Length: 367
Image (tube, rainbow, N blue to C red):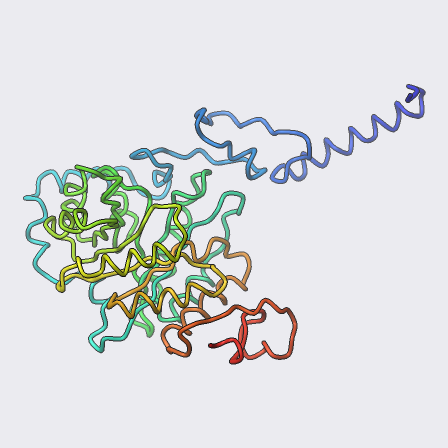
């Protein structure tokens, strides 16, 4: 039994004071055992995870567009978006844009037949917005031709800020070598206004999931072509490939939204390659950060005659320099064809790993 004496009461009051001061000074961390109330103006739907509870920081107000939390309203001017939407409405369906070879097609398929490796960035919940210039520069120097920015992941709506930073940093490389990597927005595109926002944000392309978009996919593809940005069709079967090609898409990305093991999805991607026409650019999706198997799977895709491989979820936190080093290391392995199979060596500080980024192996790990 604890007696409520003057001493105990004093200790309680002092402890409460310290907790209050700590919560006020470090509101983004929260206090263990307490849930911070959402700020004014925030509307969290019942089927959404509260960004406050999952990340321990105050979320920014974000917009839902086309059923997906993308938050691009803060990144682009609405008047510009409206003009682009009107341009699509007044056009003849983007037919004029279907004839030439797209910018992405040229970047993803090299005249020499050399493979290309692309990277997807998507900041996870709980990771604060941060400076991504160094990561963007490192990815470009690694000869990555395309960066896909997935803004559907952070539920705080700051994905728009991530996209804007990548676009601005890559633009600084115009006229230099290596030149800017193409920036593609992936955010569950469902409406023409979504496509217009991608164009207004300065994106080179937009990912359109043929399954999610459904009957609207052809309209979205036409809108992208009209606005001069490249539509990338994410497909899972032959029917979706045919629909995308008929709508004018030249970049076909095989991507399975399945919980199946990665090795099975890789097998399915190899089987689906023959359904992609020769006049299209075939891109295979391989899950990144598997600790080594992604290298083997990427080479498996390239062996199946895919022109390019996209590592999905390859980087989600630019606050740790080791993450971008990992990306560049894996990309360099594939482009140099140094090994067909890689086993990641997680040993830390050993002399044998000093030739490569620490913890990711050396020549002895290449089989």
